[in-house]
Image (tube, rainbow, N blue to C red; front, top):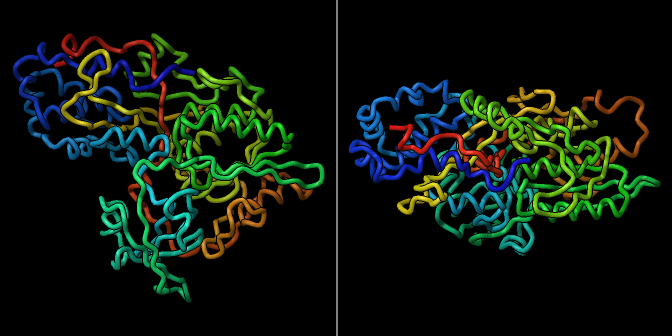
Length: 491
């Protein structure tokens, strides 16, 4: 397990150039040009697909004046960043407010408490409908007339579509009114109900949404709905497993259907909490771009591995369950660290996946800041940061090829028209998992394939804001610097 925050010390040495030591060509790279300079250097050094992007070639930096002209020709940092992305990259992004980015990693966001999915009203339609997945406790929505399974088609009187949903739902307006709808005979009709909601700045979401223990004769089955791998909740996660252990659960159902990822270290802790008998063994291994892989292999090969552990870093001993199997509920929104958990556990214990195929994000990112010195002082002129993909991640057997998603053992789509109550034993996905544990099986569960109907209420829409929550975050840093100071090795 690697140490401390992974806001790479190496990157400090790369982009933190002392402005006094730069030549005249680079001294002129100020304002947005300074940002574009930061973008290129970070992407050139860390981007996973660096070798596949011609404009990220090391040759771009060999001639100082030519490099300066190249940066001057790409003065918009956001557009420049987008232009440097590999065609297969769905997941890298850049922000102009790294404080908001850091908060979001811990579930601290502006929120009214409504978690929803956006669906196309029909195949190929540009009109959208919002489907409410659940409501956060103690939020603005928690005492409003809105609940799981509700539908909305309008915001502030405007019908939602692929062109306006960003401004209406994710714009600067903290307050908006949802126009609620019913689904009847293939049509979405306003039902006359309107719900006004106000987002609370810096609202803290609790990723440990539901914890239950169900008793069936001699079996005690733990259930945890876990919605984000947030490192600030590591101790709370450990306490949840302490409760499971105190109740001597015999099986665990882990509900990751709405979990879009998060911290790799937290994922490793969760894998270790589920098991406990594999301490020191490889849980996952990191596959960086060729030049970084070469460095790690020559200088710190151990840092490429994430190993099962028995203790939280700077914390308590893990309350591991030492289970030999786990049931995991998934959906089309299950991504990143959730997929890593499934893939990383598979070589060691039986993982029974129930639900829908997952997203297929087998790559991870780091946060790159524009440091101005070797003390990790952030550039005071802006709040930009990048979250580029820097690695693919494989399990202990080297398997990382799941870009099309992880296929469930038991295929079962969530019934959006009859959603049920999360945590209730009769809720569709949970009920299926319970039945696999409680009912004596005539065949190995991993060989079964069930499909209960179609994806109701229309296909899931690729909401770009939710895509950014599909995270596999490396939140620890490697202790050794990678490169010489910028003014010794870079243009």
